[in-house]
Image (cartoon, rainbow over all chains, first blue to last red; front, side, top):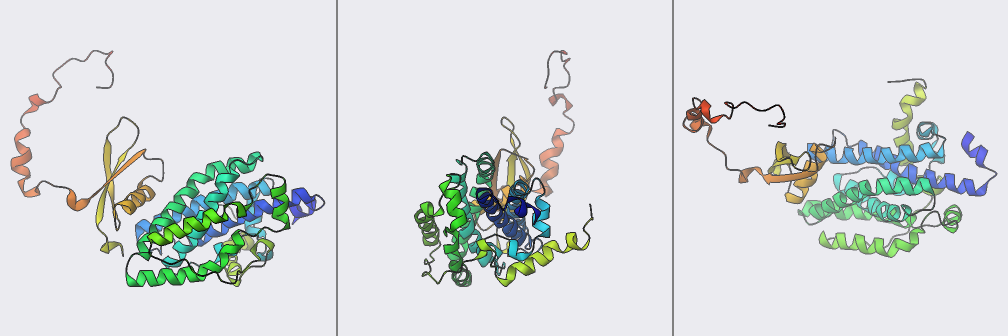
Length: 256
Length: 94
């Protein structure tokens, strides 16, 4: 990666670049996942809801990855290998059924909303600008996912059972959202980004409230799975990238 | 799935001061999600600043078979149109 090489001798710039990749890749990968529903959602209305969220997220990713790579976010999106992605493991998980997609969205959008509310106050002008703009979109994603969680959890026996399975699947990826490693520590110390642990209690309370409305129980804590922020991904991300990157890698000069 | 859901009629106010106009319908399980579906389906291109949804079955409609008695009597009452006045050029928006 040319960009990483240029910045390698500056640990502060390195941490900033890394942070942009983390939040940019989260948005990109979740956006790509959601767009897989296009034409397959349970109803045409839900199809549009999911596609709208996908477009919001891909829009955010475009701004953030452009910032990380001197205006060429496409290079980062389409020409990086799987080990260079820095998204959390939650967002790369397969869509599964509609219940699992909704649980994944609830868990991620609630976190992203709390993060972006604070990030909007960042001393870094870019981070505060993108977070201020995106926070309204994310608030809507959070509300939509919460509404669906309640409808499905407090719906039929089958929808409730599927929601319990979905929670069970996704829950082990939550601790990663609050993990603070060295790179993030550096950013927090510069007071440019919030420490996610500062809103972990609020996050758990908020999720707990939605689940209570949905008549679902908070799952027991499982052994956390970490590593996405350092490039250790599940097998699923490689398959996602194969679809997403196929065209620009096969026809590098393709235009439309 | 969506055929199990009731139908809702969607009305959008394009901007402040204008009336809500009927734009179409959505399927949704209840009124909150009907609003969200309406937002996601009909306001993707900045079409409005306010949304109404109303259950289609709550709309009382006139009977098409009675269109004759209901509407045809107005056909020959052209004097009800305010078109017999000269409007001064200075008067706009009329």
